[in-house]
Length: 191
Image (cartoon, rainbow, N blue to C red; front, side):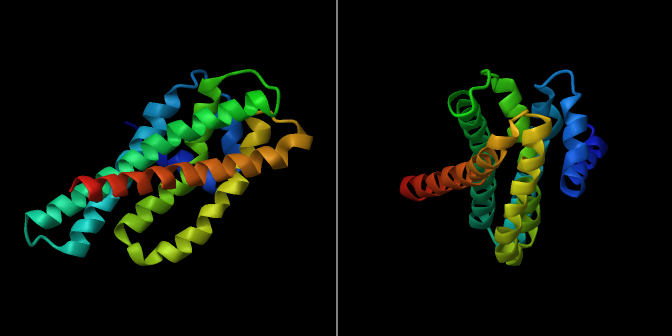
């Protein structure tokens, strides 16, 4: 895994989304988003939450380790499942509402890179949970990232761009949150 490239892409998507989406559009294989971006970012999010949970609960016993592992799994499952669910729904949205071709790999590539904001915020919140309120506000930066990607990568027509951006942004924010909520409820129920 090339972490230098990973952080370069993440910082470019945050600092200059238009330029980043142009570079992403030139990628030959759309499936490289999995190994080059999504899976490493989910791993970093899980590691961050694991370390933050251990710092919060301490190393007092097996309960603290179990809590850290549960929190780490909740974040990993929610981001993983949320990513695939959002990509599927964005693809269906493109086909039904915007009369574009069915291209799930394009939707996965778009959703993976557009989730850079939730990924980075989760890494920060994992270690510094006190920034949760600020992160809730900063997560709406995803709207700008999606706005730029809708033109460059998804090639949405200008008249449909705002609607696509709003719906896609909501899906990218809500899907992981819903899956995490369900995972936490099931964990409590099964414990």
